[in-house]
Length: 280
Image 1 (spheres, one colour):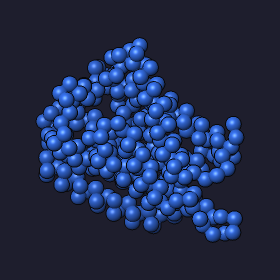
Image 2: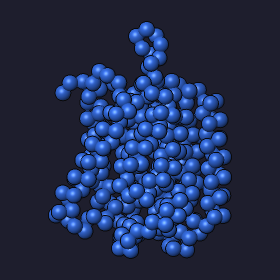
Image 3: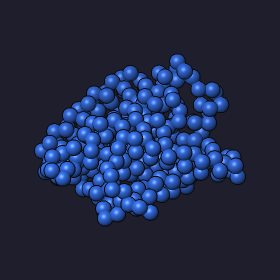
Image 4: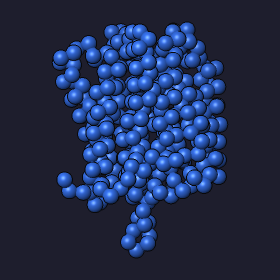
C-alpha cells in the first residue's frame, strides 16, 4: 500500500464518507439476510457499524505512516471545562433538535409501521439489553462516528482548509450519511455543534461527550415514556434548552480563548505551513 503524500481535500472527504456508508449498509444488508429481525435492533445495527468505522479509520491511518493517533484523530487533551460544557451542550441541543424533527414529521409523516419500528428500536428488552443498548447508542456509536468525521476527516482537511470550511464539509457529510431525509435538519443542527466544539477545543473529546449526551438523552426520554417525551417537546422546554445552549456556546468560546491547552491544540490542526513558510 502506497502512503498518501498529498493533503486531504473536500472531494476526499465526500469519497470517504460515502465509501464508509456504502460499506456499512452492505455489511448490514448481508446480516439481515440471515437475521431479518436484526434490522430493528439498535444493538445489532450499531454493532455492525463499529467494525466498519474502525476499519476505515485503521485504513486512513495506514495510508499516512509516521503520524501518531493524536495527529491523525485529534485525540488530544482538552480543558476539563470544555469537556463539561460539551456534555451539557449535548443535553441542551436535544430538545430543539427533537422539536424540529417533530415539526418536519408533522408535515411529512412517516408510515405508521416505520414510526412504530423506530420507537421499538429504542426500547430495551431487559436489564442486560438496556445496558448494552445504552453503551452502543450513547458511547460506542458516537465515538466511532466522531473518530471518523471530526477525527480523521476534519483533522486531515484542516491541513488545507479553514476551520469553518472543514466543519461545514464534515458536518454536511455526517448529516447525509443518515439516510432518512426527514432527520437531516435536526442532525445538521447537531453536526454544527459538533464542528463548533471541535474547532474551539482542537480536540476530539468534547465532541464525543456532546454526541454521547445527545444520543443518551434520546434514550432516556424514550424510556421514560410518552408523557416525558411530550414534556421535552413543549415550547417552554425547547425555549429554555435553546437559551441555555446559546449560553453554553458563548461560555465555550470564552474558555477556549483563554485556555493555553486549547490554543496549542488548535495550532496543531493547521493549516500546515507550505515549503516557503506561508500557509496555503
